[in-house]
Length: 397
Figure 1 (cartoon, one colour):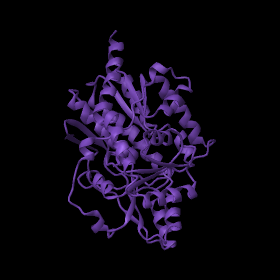
Figure 2 (cartoon, one colour):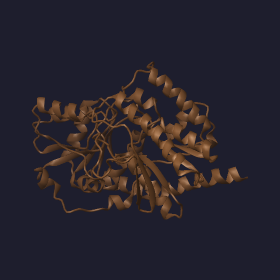
Figure 3 (cartoon, one colour):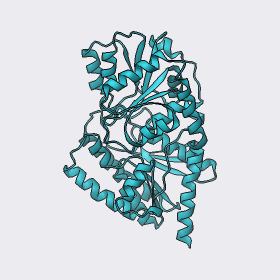
């Protein structure tokens, strides 16, 4: 589940498709509920093979309790046990790729690369601890933030290459004194096989939402996403009975949002729990539009993977975000943009979509054309392979 799994599993499958041998070390499935999935209990390591990829799933600390402390314990436990599993695998690799967050997993990459005397790449989806500070989870002067910055500096300086997902992240990392030739942007993208997957579920009938104009949010319900503004919007538009908001997923903020919806007695919001990934495209196609918020304007260097998925399903988008993702939506003409926290403007955008349903379909078509041209998993995997080839060739020379 989640954008991280989608990025890495897509990369691994495509690299195998292009002739590379790929081994993945990951945790036992427990996200997002904090409970181990059936079939993964009672063993320290589970070995699988999926789509040609060798997978080792190791035990990690897990709990259904949602707090920063518990998440950090989860991250640290995976760092420790991924190193143990890596050591047991012995040296049989040419390169290590580590994807963050969590930040601590970068120490696993550093440690294993030193043991095996091979290069390693630090793939950066979010810059930590910056993202936690920008989302309001940690104070900038907190001890964990100071420790995080020290670890970040160590990782950036020791990794052979860094692959951030956005231009803004590249610029931010370069501003920390990292040489530009050590940084290559490899953006998020979409798996067209995933996007084109079909199922027979009539979601509108299943959810009792026939004849509604549906705005969908499908993804992690966390602090950085700022879904409170969807609740505020639904509250303000409760008299427009045709407009309905569907929130699909799970996360640390879900219980709070469900309780707030109950207290406001809102009937125009439906919460649907986490779904198997192959069901998400049909949910997106069922909806009339996607709504994608971020919690505040301080988060300027993120482009949510759910934006790509919505465009992949030709859905017009209302993006509530600043920075690079805001500029991208406007550049592509893939939807309307609203600054985080600007509820009046979001109300205007929602009403505009509803009242101009046929006129706004070109937003989804524009988005689809954009991502299929440059942002499929195959294209991005080839970019990563180019980085790997350059690193390995330089080492040999």
